[in-house]
Length: 173
Image 1 (cartoon, rainbow, N blue to C red):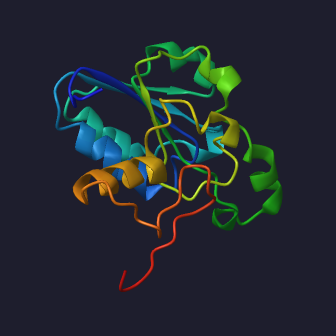
Image 2 (image 1 turned 90 degrees about the vertical axis):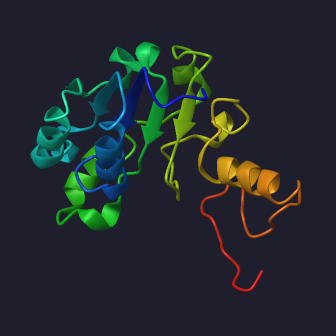
């Protein structure tokens, strides 16, 4: 997309416990004409204190339980995983795990010029069937491309593509 202004950013998944989404919302509130959408299960909503801080910067924010309602207007989709270890009651986790899965079918409703990002590791919230989509240019694949560009095109073997379940770092490499 090549810009940090005039964007609609949709954050999806665990917005309650996800430190990356809290930081991202605060960071994006520093830019011009940003709109933030939050999509999550009721029990994983963006914390009020984060929303209040962003609201102080006059950034429009909206909460949704369905991605379909905002996907067409989304420029950047930032997906987070629901982490089992965050739940005291395993039944609560079971209710929300897999609530949102990004796959080629759901992405048919999205813009062709947009980006899907994920802080990694992923568990199942982004289908591996979506890995070859050009909009899946973030996470490990994006890091890999950036690393190659910064290293004269050389591969970094410690990084895996988005299709991998996690990123490994080799010390001394």
